[in-house]
Image 1: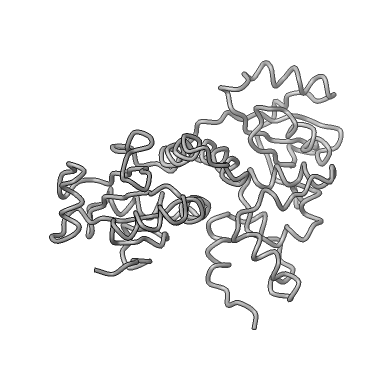
Image 2: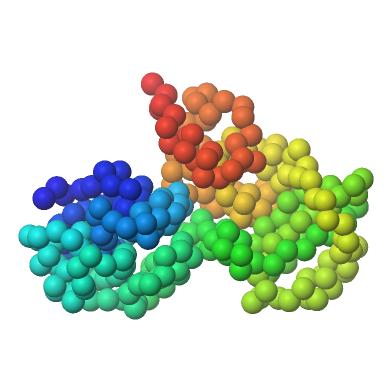
Length: 305
């Protein structure tokens, strides 16, 4: 059995997996990291493939798992060592994906993830395991939950008319429930579109905050993104990176307040930023593009010599 399996099967996504549970336990003991144990059907049904491609291929989830955990994949439809581990956890063969978060001894840290196949479900289990073990949650991982809420339709949206949408973005981003901001136009009016978490504040509370800042809710519908959303970010070297919507919002707020915007980048994004000094990135404003597509174009780009 190979020690690692990377991009060999669509069901495993983009994560570099160990394929031996005992090896994973040894690495967990050495590193102090928890284990992500995936039981997966390979080759698998459409649910298994979709889990690999939609969840286990999300760029920032991949980074979170590879940075903070020891990932181990066990095939639930193979004999040998795979079958031994499957029996040890009383998992059925030929089953949909199941994920355990374990300590180095193989003891579950949080309840296993089963019968849920969206990125937000896995993200919350990962963060829950880190919290339970007293580990620090990287800022990019905290922001990732905002993006996943938006992608899963759990956020609510509002649009506000502002005297200046660039300053309006940073003002609205300072409200605790706001997950993302984007400067744009409705007709000839400068507006800011926000996604917010209704569990943290309802629409009325957000409206009151906006009114206190001199903004009012727009009744228009035809929103058009400005050519330079997240104005402060657009003028910085970080604009050449693939950055998620929530990262864009937080970085755009950090820059004018001298609050170290690089802290919101993932390790790989930071490495890409360092390579910018070698002329590797070019001048494209990747931050505005579709995040996953922009990330894929970077991943396939050759490194500078």
